[in-house]
Length: 144
Image 1 (tube, rainbow, N blue to C red):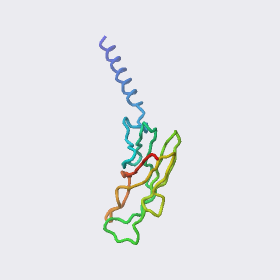
Image 2 (image 1 turned 135 degrees about the vertical axis):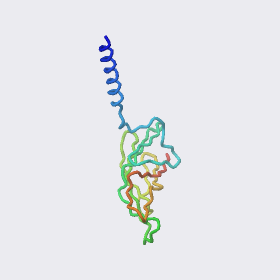
Image 3 (image 1 turned 90 degrees about the vertical axis):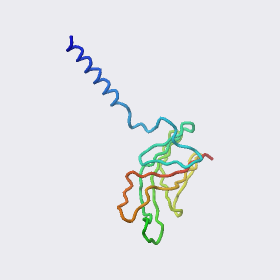
Image 4 (image 1 turned 30 degrees about the vertical axis):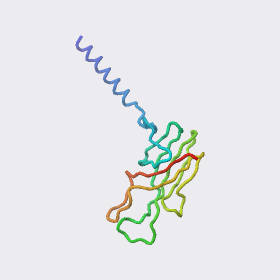
């Protein structure tokens, strides 16, 4: 009889482990709204932010280029950081390239949503190799 309870206990534990491990950890939607309109939003690399009332999502996909002049350096120009961003509205994904330098595209409008890149962090340092694996962007979104 004791052996039968041990087998049942093992089956219950195994079932719980399978159910918990089947949780969809790739789901891009957090449990609460994280995209605030008419305000600056920080977005971590490979993170989605969303606004459920507007049914919009935005993700920082990649630092495509970073030629910004590092702190402590003397440079001919300030440089530019280019990021790849996904903006999803009406179930359509719009892939964007936005820049920090004003000579390049810093903003866009999609389906009445104005999107502007404000900043890319971290800023390059002179004394270290700049690898943006844990970076984030600051982005402003408003509805026209």
